[in-house]
Image (cartoon, rainbow, N blue to C red; front, side, top):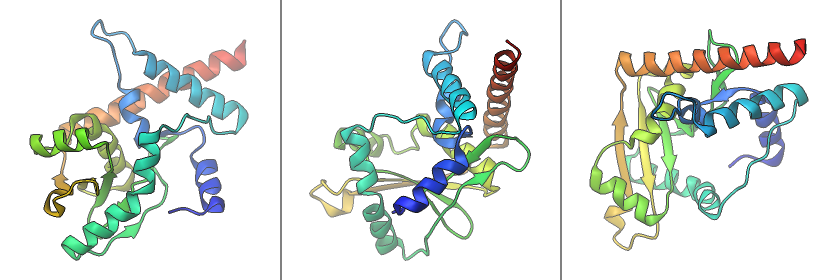
Length: 204
């Protein structure tokens, strides 16, 4: 877990960036083809961060707090079950796309780890489906685009499950070139629109 000083530096470094954790919002459109409210809201938030140099604060729900508090426990359980060498990650800037970055939860020598500690009902839904949830694929693709790694392991963990054998769900996600290209194009389009909004603002 980050110290307060490390977290402050991390927040400062990513200020104004489209990050992997918000990639799904950047790709959110309504059925009629219009941008969803969450996409527009993200654009305004990033514009605000670039204008002020301060990170926009978000409400932390009980579910989000639970996930954060149990991430290290999930990593320890993963290491115990697999014997893999896991290390903390850092903030990666995309090598070519300005203002596009990602901070994976953890790294392996050859891949990344995305760790989720959801509510039990969600955990059981994922486990029974047996696949990486679609809603998290944009985030994982963005991480791979920014780090250059070939795959990302999806880990869901819930220590409240009584049967210890069922507490962790793992799947390896190695997206196709087409999946990666789709996310990369979406990032470029979003950031292009944000740049246009910036130009409109400063020219007013």
